[in-house]
Amino acid sequence: MEHRRARRRVKQQRELAEAAVALAQENGFTNTTVEEIANAADYSVSTFFRLFPRKEDVIFFDLRERLGAMLDDFARDDHESAWATVRRTFIDNAREWETSDPEFALARIRLFQTEPVLRSRYLENLAEWEAAVAAMVARERGVDSGDFECWLVASMAVAAYRAAFSAQLTDAETHFADHVERAFDALEVGFAARGLTSR
Image 1 (cartoon, helix red, strand yellow):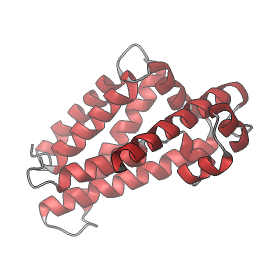
Image 2: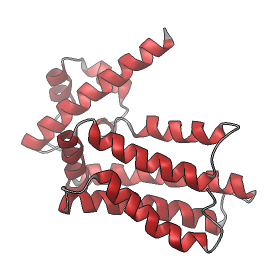
Image 3: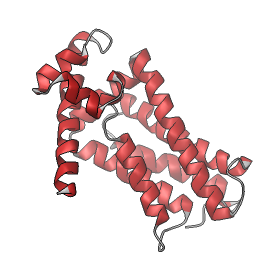
């Protein structure tokens, strides 16, 4: 029952996100209302706000679930190292982001890279990921969550993802996951010397 409810929620979120992206491409995100998004997806406004606290969140409908999955992976008894978990999660997310619907994925990237209100929310989401990664690395190393090197790893991991999003806009022929993997490969060379990327 719970699993069915979760699948229904994901389906609703995805349909609202698709409607929001389509409308925002035509009219701009700021000029698109929640009512228009809900109507286009055949849902009520109350359903929209049950699923998304803010209008901007519809564009990032899957990020919280992906973050939760990464934290769950690292919490398992047989988990990989923090770095390996982060690397795999970011690359797998990039692959899933793109392969499920390449046009939809690219449209989302264009929106949150160009619309100021979406860019602001995008950065807020990345701050959550950064804090989560820093906490994972700190737990593995047995240090305080405010440790400089833990935050360095977290900041660079998030920066790699941001760089890959930017690269995707200028080089859409290359798979998004390949951009992400290349960015993580570059980071790994520098971090390996400091013992921060055990896998």
